[in-house]
Length: 404
Ligand code: ARG
Image 1 (cartoon, rainbow, N blue to C red):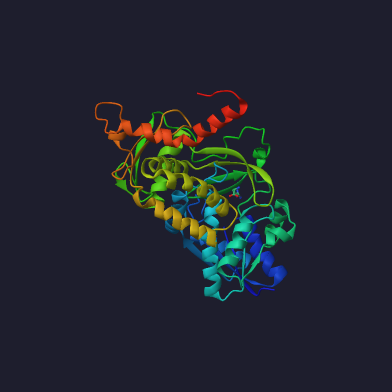
Image 2 (tube, rainbow, N blue to C red):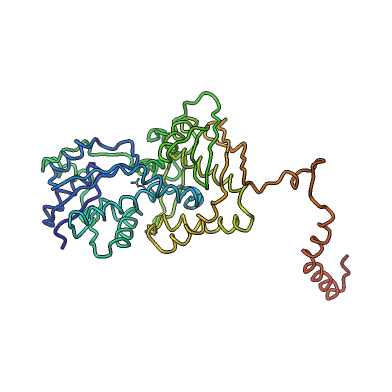
């Protein structure tokens, strides 16, 4: 059994109770690690530290990982236009490997022999924590107290009260919300009935308040967004800016029944205005800049990439190999994309341009500027269809019906 462990800590009810419970039940020393990945409910450092100490942690490390998440995790998701099951931009699935990387680093720094997380046994996040940790540090044990303690939320609140663990939680909590700079994932409560329309209440980023259409230009360099309306921003700041400007139009909500890795179908809702605007704009720019075969092959591999990340395989050889392919495709994905939100919840790309576009006006136009050699098409089309016309003639001969 582990002697010293590093816990992914939020300062909420479950992870605070976990600190005390693991100490009490397993006799381990606990170091809390709290990451800021852009969640709006990130607690202040002094609150985190005092809660961790009150629960019995020997230390509490706080790390601002927002730029790291944007520049080393969201960037790959943008290159891959990553949407699990064609919809979900992997919000939670992208933050878990960031957290794992820091847990492992802190385990090494403190000489710990295990890491722990506060996930239940029903979700994907346990998979991401455990597979990720074992990819980076196969020698570390991974412990999941919530999966084994068998306490309800009420029991946990009582446990916290009994042991003087300060928490700001009620015995009933309606929604389970996971947030980071890439968006918000909302589950539980009424949402668990797939027939019930999603309640307005848990949304924060996409409450409609815009009164006029919103139009803006996103500039990309080698497949990554670098500026909004000409203003250069770090990737983390750019995502936040888009959330702020596009969210109030109501764009970015998803309502889906998804397939979890553990075999459960679950109904979840998401709001990711910035992430979805970036992916839409990026993939539109690729329409303009990617050669046809590369483009088609990339589309096939994007689906696979999103599945891998969803399934907790961030640190895996296939993911790295796919990244190498995507990075190669992005060399000329540089240009501007104009997006416009006119009606609530709808964002459209209305223009795109690129100095490296493969769109050629002379080839595309039907007017006098036409440079296309029409006469070449005759032979091309005949040879393209040669196999089919040969087949058709033979069929006709066999059936005794002449084909022309
Ligand atoms: N279903 C999503 C995923 O697996 C979101 C999970 C979010 N977790 C939560 N506690 N709300 O990535």
